Length: 243
Image (cartoon, rainbow, N blue to C red; front, side, top):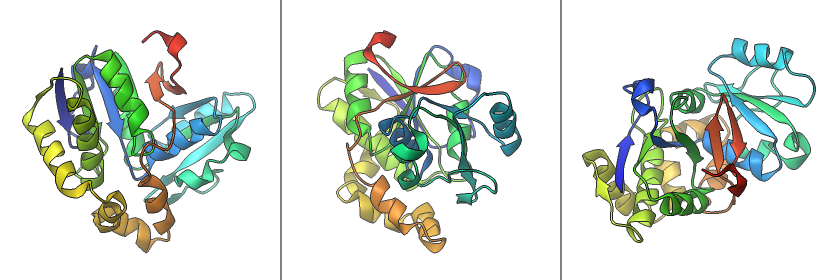
């Protein structure tokens, strides 16, 4: 099994991911929030890059729509939810369609639109995703959302944790970037919450009042969901999907 890692989506040609298995990570906070939404019964999530696109989808969909996301860390004016996992409660998202946009995560997800399989991972659902990859036993590419198209520690540590888990079970071939992710995890993965508190984006979230999100997003293997992006929307993977 060959594993590759992209530290940000900025250099990725979407067509280069065609027929590939991809894992998208945005620990703070998109993939954490989306996993939480599915854990609380969301029907599906539509990722978009702009507020205008979100409004267009909402206006063309009848009933059960939740507008969610952030710009520069805070909830977008007129939206129902921001990008804190704790906002995605059963009361607010169960059986609902969530239209989602964020500064970093939605762009990374949309980059995988041509992939054979695109899964969303975070520390919250890392066990479920890793087990899926072990069972699939095929090459895959991890795409870190990063921060403003630049490298970030937290997404790379999460990527390294996935690689570490899989390499305990299956023989793996790692690209240089995958080796770097694994090394970073071995150095910073012993205390995920401390890592989030000390990273650049974690500091930013604390400054604007979202310190509790770091505690939530640092919880490992808490949720048994696998969000899968296909045909422009994200749904929770089920065995009957035959992937």
